[in-house]
Length: 355
Ligand code: NDP
Image (cartoon, helix red, strand yellow):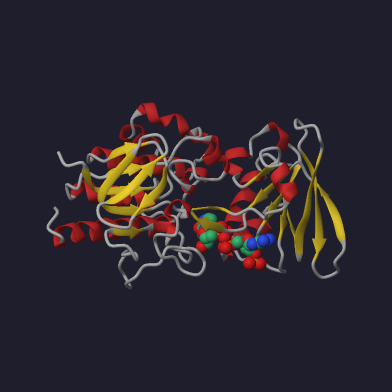
């Protein structure tokens, strides 16, 4: 057997799994790196199964209407991997993000995708074959690579935010919202996009009140999400305001006690008492491990070199999902570009006479 793989997929969100399903069905025997289960990846939002694994219900993925999906999910997924699902009574309306991801993973492995639970930490794309270095499993050579590493949540970059990260500061309400420190206490969500509304709405299940901090006078979120926020009596919009400093106790068990905010119109500061601050201010593509060897656009997202193709600046390297998309950023568009990347890889291999 050749020691050069046909196709290595990096990333385990909808783009990665969809690419794997197509590549496996094209007999490419894909190898997929799903990321490592490390604390650093958890905190930085780079845990296996991507951003969807950190959400609740997914109501807009075509093919999953509201209804009783539990029996189907139970029948489709290996019981040993069902530990990560929230109890069904917490999501009566639709498939959850973790369930959807697990269904995709199962479908990819059903067709023979091999999965390694590890990170790719560096690459050498200077000449064929392409070389990928993993954190724990050594070096891999391959004819094609599909980069589907997604994007991670942004933080504000304040020193005080860093001090209280994991002690009240978080970028994932679904991961951390149920912690005792947030129960029946006021919380702050920074941002006004769809993610912020989703985070704020989720947190109202536990918090006494949720302040949504907007730096402008309006939300960026879609109409339906804005209406959801406005209709929720526990959510209060705090407009034209930014975070000056996260306030907290020295005792780590206490953590965050409040957020000092500044009104951008009056320049006045005030303090919101809160035991938590959740960031929902957009994302940064996960491209660091590429060491600048794949061309990106000005904003850091991987550049597609031809319209309607997932071709990157490096021959044999394709990009799919949020790592290349700063515009649509939906589960279903990621899955679509994952499929495109696998087809592009397959055609490249055929054209090169490799497969
Ligand atoms: P967005 O870019 O849509 O929103 C980011 C929000 O954070 C904006 O309100 C922005 O303010 C604010 N912001 C950015 N930087 C700062 C800063 N430094 N300080 C304070 N506020 C800041 O990101 P989202 O993650 O919300 O959404 C990304 C994409 O994912 C969108 O396309 C969205 O539609 C989609 N999505 C869809 C969901 C759904 O359909 N249910 C759920 C979640 C996400 P400003 O507006 O002033 O720039």
